[in-house]
Image (cartoon, rainbow, N blue to C red; front, side):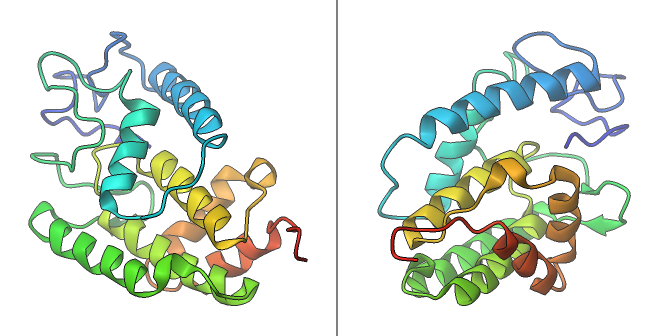
Length: 209
């Protein structure tokens, strides 16, 4: 979600927070639609590919670049898809008052969350309830860090999808309500239990089940 009303080096001056983009779109709504289209296509292609061996921040950056690299950024601000935000305006979850991590603390947070993920063997060998409980905790942490200037929801959802498939607990994302998911992700910053229960509701059956 774009930071409506907030201008910084990533946006067109005086645009009220419209990100500089390679299509020259100056409308929040039209840019959001275009970003959704690019991300949806990129995710569809990625879902047909083998899952990776390692789920680290580098992989999340690759996903972000694949989903949005052809639209966000321009020759002025640079093509920043897949790059940690730098020099952005202070950001927070719209309509909630919840601030995202300030830039000076993001790297330590990323080291921590992905260190935990590796230590937990990328959430493999867990039963369904245990998996979604761990996934929700990790996702709440990533939501609070908000490593990219925009496109965090899209890239993190695709990342969590690949993580779930690899762990043997795929999710029926098509039937998930985007707004409800966003609400529970934000809640997961302080209490991940609601997100865990919500995601588990959409767990797909596997060959073993």
